[in-house]
Image: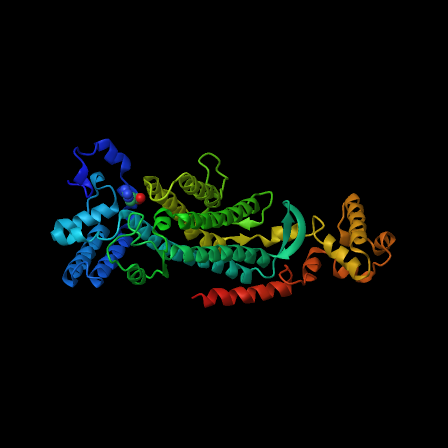
Amino acid sequence: MAKAWGGRFQEATDARVEKFTESISFDARLADCDITGSQAHARMLAKVGLITDAERDQIVSELEVIRGEIARGEMPFRTELEDIHMHIESRLTQRLGDVGRKLHTGRSRNDQVSTDIKLYVRGAIEHVDELLLELQRAFVDRAVRDVEIVLPGYTHLQRAMPVLASHYWLAYAEKFDRDRQRLADCLKRVNISPLGAAALAGTSLPIDRHETAKLLGFADVARNSIDVSSDRDYLAEFVFALSLVSAHLSTWAEEWIIWFTTEFGFLKLPDKFTTGSSIMPQKRNPDVLELIRGKSARVMADVSQILILLKGLPMAYNRDLQEDKLAMFDAYDTVVACLELAPAVVIGAELRVDRINEKLDDGFLDATALMEYLIKRGVPMRTGHETVGKLVALADSRNCRLSDLPLPDLKEVCAVIEADVSSVLGTRNAVAVLQSYGSGGQAPVAEQIAYWQQKVSLAE
Ligand code: ARG
């Protein structure tokens, strides 16, 4: 089969080179975007008079036929045809002859492939955004459901201060919201049309790049043809945004894996989301969570792959760039696979409230509330800190809780303490007094829940 670029070559390409240089095995999934881009290009060519309206109609409708054939798996892929662009164009030419040979007027595969990728990433961002919204909804639903449950809050994985369970769930809603914002921001750079930059320098033909941009729904046209032929910043950004999604998923998974241990015993996971051991009959393993944690490594590696791919490239297009798609597809597929499962796990899990409550008063979760009680009575913060430190040591030595210390003992360490101290002692009381904006107490959490309920339902 004659190559699109065969003119100056005297011998056929070595079969090993064809196998080595092909990208059809992974860029076939750009077919839809490629056809949409080519149809817009053909419409523009007709508008500026480079092809006739009749030729445009032939091209546009034949491309539609090819779209269907590819979707139904009726187009055989062949390494000699390198990539999806050549497959589609050669099929078009096979059917339309010289009319098909006009499609590539005023463009190159360099701007074409970037256009395809941008169209693809635009859809991918939309899809990931929807999945992230679903996950946020799952956490918001849980926040409503678990609003009565108090959990120990940790720093350094040591018991620190108590919060409502809902506070935890909404913390995840926040993280995934920043992920959505990052994707939306990335979309601004994605949504600039490269088409018509041609190989690198543009063209002497009277093409109308603004027209193709408009037809393809791009917000603007890239100003500099040499820049845009080499630009893959948008892919690095997209994959980085995905890597933060997976970092968030991974920390959530890790937390729940810990909570699911016998040692913690905070969490019940539904049987359908756990797996057994082939030798130990008692085992129930959180494999889904472990794989969400594990797969995040791939997405993070994909960011490195793209950056390393880009770092040594002189302008403009270099064939290295063909490898960009592998990292992007891998990151996208991996994140989508995780996000498709995550909401069901979030909704399906149960907090083991009895187990949590049993130990809720362990670990002096009310120490900070006691210190703030002293501050409210005029004790300087540092003094209060030291005082409560002493009381914690005292309780620790008696193997009891702060609330078990008799009032005279408390007063002996600090005279301002009165009987009303009982209103801040104990984990539940310590959570009830949290009142600052964004904190984990009842009123601030109720405010957050109201915010999120509105936000996720408005997003319908
Ligand atoms: N398959 C190529 C890629 O994905 C398309 C662009 C080829 N351009 C070229 N000058 N050989 O990057």
